[in-house]
Amino acid sequence: MSATAPTGSECKVQAINFSFSYAYGETKALHSLNLAIRPGSLLTIMGPTGSGKTTFLRALNRLNDRVAGTGHTGQLLLDGKDVYGQEVDVAELRRRVGMVFALPTPLPLSIYENVAYGPRKKGIRSRAKLDTIVEKALKTAVIFEEVKDRLHSSAQRLSGGQQQRLALARVLAVDPEVILLDEPTSGLDPLSTLRIEETLRQLRSDFTIVLVTHDPLQAARIKSDVAFFYLGELVEIGPATEIFTRPQDRRTEDYITGKFG
Ligand code: ADP
Ligand code: MG
Image (cartoon, rainbow, N blue to C red; front, top):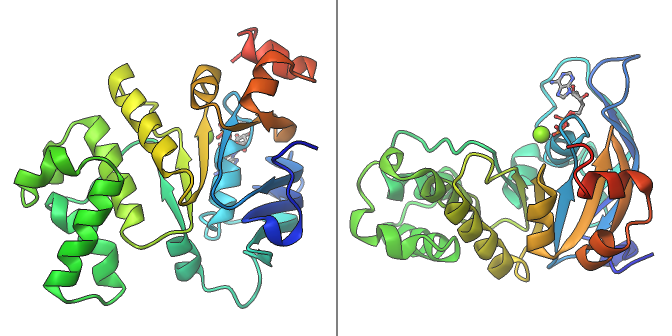
């Protein structure tokens, strides 16, 4: 297949016949998903509401563990190891696979303390070390210049777009390998949305990024590899240029031309 189908050790993330259901006997939220993501790449997953996008992200860092009745079959691999393996330390998994949610929810703390929170929990106490980590994370999330003079004021006074870049900085501060973003711009104005997209483009080579969107235009703008999910199925995956100019599946074509959404 396309450039998005690396094999074996080349994969950062790989789903092999991975199915997920919320309750026994109910329709599966993900049907036998097969998908591979190379390290240092960005994959945009698009699809209408209910297509299983969030389920896939939450399965990857096991956020569904405490939801009663959930079950999966098949495998979901991170660096070739099943994230549901018995020896997996879930806290460590969530550090390696960070998540940014649709609605930013900064802690009721200062900008600095929001970013220092994860590193502190990891046991880092040195003020100098924390200063370095916080500054680097804010810079990488492209928000440092805007907040450097008010690091100790409340994060909740930031704009929505700034809070989303702060959420990204909080993930970056614990040194992740994979960054998952679930419709991170759905509550943002167009300008803030473009800033987030630009930030992700800058980060893509240093991390493995999975961006979920319900907006095909966003997937087209990002110009990364794109996967189209529909009703829990991966319909099509490939470079944006291919998907948007020569979709192979009728459902993809109907979706990108706005016949449903
Ligand atoms: P998307 O993010 O693409 O909108 P989801 O992954 O949220 O899709 O949902 C996929 C399917 O799983 C939908 O049919 C949805 O109703 C169902 N689902 C999602 N979360 C739950 C849950 N906590 N309990 C039961 N069903 C759920
Ligand atoms: Mg969702």
